[in-house]
Length: 101
Length: 287
Image (cartoon, each protein chain N blue to C red):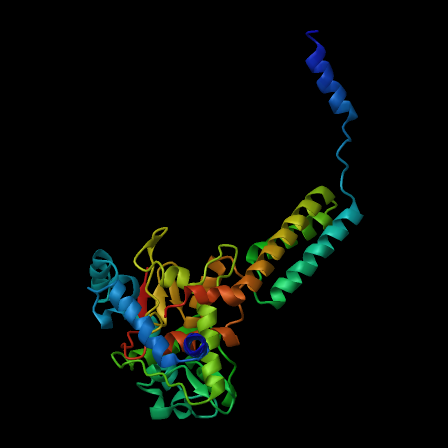
């Protein structure tokens, strides 16, 4: 009975799917999504420096064969780029709230 | 029946009057009115800082903090921009290879004219800043343009500002829809949040002048360009208006535009126009 908790944990861990290491295809797909979002942000003239840095970090890790790191950085870049696109769109009207009248 | 018709007619008239009044307000809100904008802008700062003399706003953070002001006044005895000023004076007088000088490109030989820049060029349909005009002068005379962000450009504009010290900023907006659009575009740029920090120019220089951001005291937006170019201890050197815009963008983690991009020219037009009447104080020195 005392062993039931450790055993249950062991069983749960053995049944859980092992985290798969990212491969080159995962990286290319994540990078291309991030790059597209980043280009859209730049075309709206709302690019963030952190997006550019995250994208560069993804490329560097991808070129070095560290696909886990490359995918993580690409996903971060995509999220940042999407946030900057949201900012660009919302600010089209929101800036007026700050105006001195 | 008659009473009912009267009530109906009365309600209809009231609704029409209300609609007419609302429409007029909407039209007024959308109309580009630089005179009203400048008045509101100046009043905002005058009311927010009632003890600051109006002409003192051009001294940026020193107008907000007495201790800093005293330190600055002592520093002004041997100002850190003096080297740039001397260099600018010499450069301004030195002829180009074709024998002409900067004086040939500007009204009044380029002396005492800083307060009229930027201006709206009706031929080009765009705002022309002093930095842009200087580089166009160089290129028209067969010389390579200077970097917009430091060194030579800062020295030249420092000298030109110095010859205009004390003159009230005098920016004109011609009766041209493109000029009004440029003013409005500059205003939009000034108030638009950007970068990961989600800051607009106004976040610091309208909402928080006099407050500290880390170790620095934020300058008021009113008259902020009257002191340009500036020597900044943080930069260990001189910087132009272009450099100021680029640095502000980077600090909010926004990718800066190219110096003299249309947006920067327009925001310079907006900020200079709303400072009309305040004296030129450049070149300045800032922490």
